[in-house]
Structure formats: C-alpha cells, structure tokens
Amino acid sequence: MRSERERWLTIGAFAVVYLVWGSTYFAIGLGIRSIPPMLMAGSRFLAAGCILSLWGLARGAALPTAGQWARAGLAGFLMLVLGNGCVTWAVQYVPSSMAALLVASEPMWLVLAAWTCFGGSRPGLRTSLGLASGLLGVGLLVAPQGGGFNAGALAGSLAIILAAVAWAVGSLFLRTADLPSSPSLATGMQMLSGGAVLTALGLLRGEAAALDLAAVSTTSALAWVYLIVFGSMLGFSAYGYLITATSPARLSTYAYVNPVVAVLLGGLVGRETITPTAWVAMLIILASVVLVTAEESEPSAGAEIAEAAALAPEALGERA
Image (tube, rainbow, N blue to C red):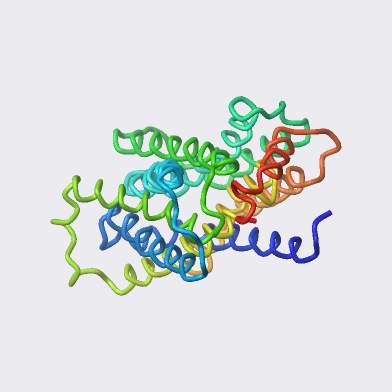
C-alpha cells in the first residue's frame, strides 16, 4: 500500500509529464526558429545536466563510478540523442501533426519491449484495448491532410519512429540500471552524456557556422530557457520518478495526453482552430487513458516489470 505522500507525488509527476511535455512541441518549434536544432538540444541538456549534477553532489551524493557513467551514457544516448535529438531534427521536415502521431506510437513499443525483451508477460486485454483506442484517437487528432511523402518527410518520419523505439527501450533499461542513488545526479549524468553527443553532432553538421548569437530572437531564447528548466529539469525528474513508481502501460499514457495539450496550446496561444473532430479525438484519448490506467485484475507485462524494479531498490529505488 502506497503512502499518501507517494500517491500525491505520483499525481504531481503525471501532471508535469502530461502538461509540461505536452508544451515542448510548441517550445521546440519556437526554439529552432533561430537556433540550429542539434546545438539547441545539446546545449539544453548540457545546461540542465550541469545544474542537476552539481545539485546532487552538493546534497552529499557520492561521486559516480566509471560503470555508472557508462550506464548513464547508454541511457542518455537512447533517450536523449535518439529519443529527443531525432524528434528535434525531424520537426524541420515533418508537420507537427504527423510528428505527434508518430511519437504516440511509443506506448506500443514500451509495452511490446517489456513483454519481449524484459521478461514481461503478454499485455492483458484491457491494456491492449486501451493502447489501441488511444492510438486511434491520436490518429483522428493529428491525421495529416493530403498525401504523399517527400524525401525529407520520409527521413523525418523514420527518425521519429526510431526515437519512439529508443525512448521505450531506454525507459525499461533504467528500471534496473545501477545508477547513483541521488535522482538529481543520476538524471544529470544522463543529460550530460546525451547533451555532449548532441552538441558534437551539431558541430559535425556545421551548425556552429549557422549560429549567430546576435540573431537569436527573444522568443527562441525564452523557449530554450523553458526547455531547460521545465522540459528538462522538471520534466525528466518527474519521468524518472514515474519509471519506478508505476507500470510501463500507465507511464505510456503521457504519449496520448501530450498531443491533446499540444492542440489546446496551439488553439489558445497560437490561435489555431480546434475542429469538432479534434474534440472527439481528445475524448477517445482520455477514455483510453482510463482503460490503461485502470487497475487490472490479472498480471501484465507492466506489473511484472514494476515488481522486478521494486525488488532492486539499490539500483533505482531512490529515483522514486
């Protein structure tokens, strides 16, 4: 039985992941208007990683071992370089609606990976129906108008699919990875590792020559700061907590809610029109969240993975 404090922490963490990460599509779009994509993503994570790591060390965390750095580097590569970097690069070529739809495939990869690669059992009927209906709702919400891919759109779409798969595998890897007990230090190490690789990729792509600090708009600069403070520090800390506090199926519901938040933000801030179809799609999405998050009466892949994580408190228990 979870304590009342743990219950409210979980609710708060879900609120952050739902709302803050739902707004990052909008913020990334604003940021890359005048900041090259890889350098923006890399500098964002380097800045957030430095702050979180120093905070963890200042609170008495032990210096990480070489093995912990290696595992943090792998997690950072999967979730930040592939997971976030691919999306940041792809939004230059893929419409936001298509990007959101492809990112929403992540719950399928998360539950499938838990079942096939991490010792879980076959997902229950309720979870499967919830995931399927959620994907249907997201499809209605963000279905692109017209047809046909150009080369850039095809490459961007494949990059986002790769991002979804990498994020799912990285999330499950973190459940049992031996990382520092300090959540701030562990998260900061992943961001430093991923941010360093993203920055190096940006330099190799020649983005430094394209970056003119004097030409960076106030809007892009504020979006960059928002992504550091809220999207990276607060958002990833909340996600890190939920990785060990809930099941993969429940955690995956953020990928259904985030597009809803993105559409609402576009309507309220970007003055975009929200169609009746969009409202219907959002109702379907929220219904799917209820299905997936409802307590199942039979063991699921998510429940077994969560139990395995609970049996390894020295690995990630302090992240909860």
